[in-house]
View: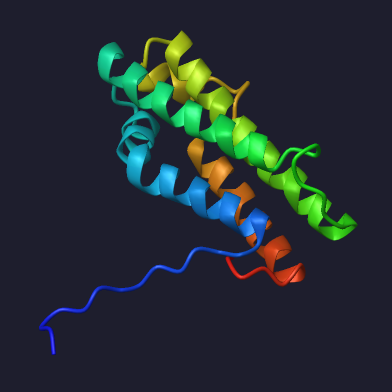
Length: 140
């Protein structure tokens, strides 16, 4: 018997659950430090910020393409959830573009009221969590 067991991660079978799973992995692992630093008001180097943003935007676009209306046919209740996920991803992309436009200055981003900050985007995620329970998804 091994001393340490690995926790098996089961990927969701529901396509919207899989999209949220991928989104959570991007936000929690790739851009978590980036978002925390900007939310506190710190400035980041443009080179590092561009690298983080470009890779995450590419992955977010891939998720949007997977759940687009042309690629995924689902029922009405799931359709509402899809639009919530799309809105959440687009808000994060807007935040990234504003950060790039402001040269990764956290103080300017805090004062900018035209975009949603990471806390508001996290609130959108909580609303989507409730909708995922309604459609009985395997990933919440």
